[in-house]
Image (cartoon, rainbow, N blue to C red; front, side, top):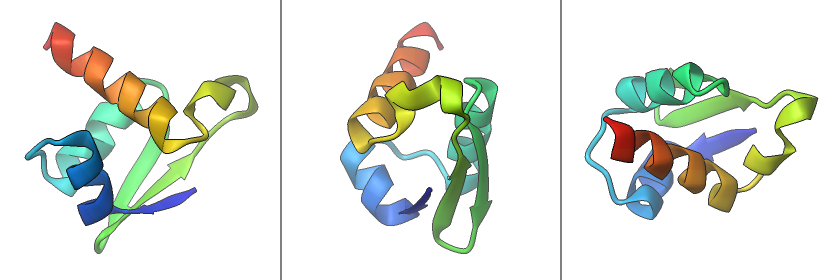
Length: 67
């Protein structure tokens, strides 16, 4: 799944760089790479909860509360 970084950044209301955001998602178990202005996600079948922007936002915000 590819998501345009500026759109995701606005949706999540964060100031993380694309590289840092990719690292956060990867540490959460969602394989992610940043290239240009795109985040490329490789969502595994057992993570169906993260197949939407809502799911990604939920995972990201939960990780930021613990940080």
